[in-house]
Image (cartoon, rainbow, N blue to C red; front, side, top):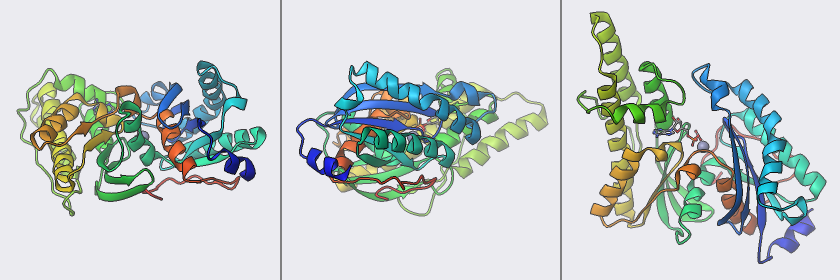
Length: 345
Ligand code: KG4
Ligand code: ZN
């Protein structure tokens, strides 16, 4: 297997079959030379978890086991390729739900063993960053990227394809997590981010909410904001008053967007490099627009992946997997899955 991997390293065209199972999406994709998506299949389990108001790890693992083979078959079919046309496989091995990750890792180990293909391990956070390369073919490092998903709020300096520096992160809840929790307080279903967005379009930001400060200059904290929303909802309940959900959603979204957009634009200006967003929360239109405006004022180029590449998908794993593959990164059959992982781990 290793000899084949070495021989393929200098091939002109490299096709990677990628699998992503870190949370509640089972996704497979075929990506050519890191930048061209030949197919991308996403099976969302959101409906299975909506009943419980959040992702249930055991249900996620079982659903991945059922769906892995299916999404891989479909990705190959949609790319009009067979296993023989694939040069390597990439799989997310962290960060995420460890049981969910293990299903994907085990599936790809079996696939690589039988097909005699090299296996490339990919860090989920680095995958999100790489989604920007797929939407913006001219983008190359260095740039700053704010990863805002259900599990992360990382401000990362991308020095090179495999070279990252963490400049800041949340000290408590992740950006998507705080959207989901606020939505639950307002009685909205999971996932809460898009629900808050929809509601806030009909409201005005009339509620005063705090701008909590975290330790480091580019760190963020959302717990004070979350507590403020809890207090508003509870005190209205005790007084028998109605809260204006649209206005509270708009106030909350505006505050979160303010916290995130200012951090990214300021840091990019300081480093004098382009700025980028990624992760599920990057689908938020107010966040995209506000960050774009702030960057424009500072003469900073701003990038954001298309919607389908913001949420969890395997194309981003195939893209990052390609750069890892080029750098000679390979996993053995002893590859494990990790619930927590920083960039560059
Ligand atoms: O990146 P992602 O699909 O999965 C993780 O890696 O976590 O992100 C999911 C998160 C959820 O918390 C969801 O509520 C949030 O992204 N999200 C949004 C929006 N669309 C999805 N948050 C705010 N506004 C949105 N429009
Ligand atoms: Zn993600």
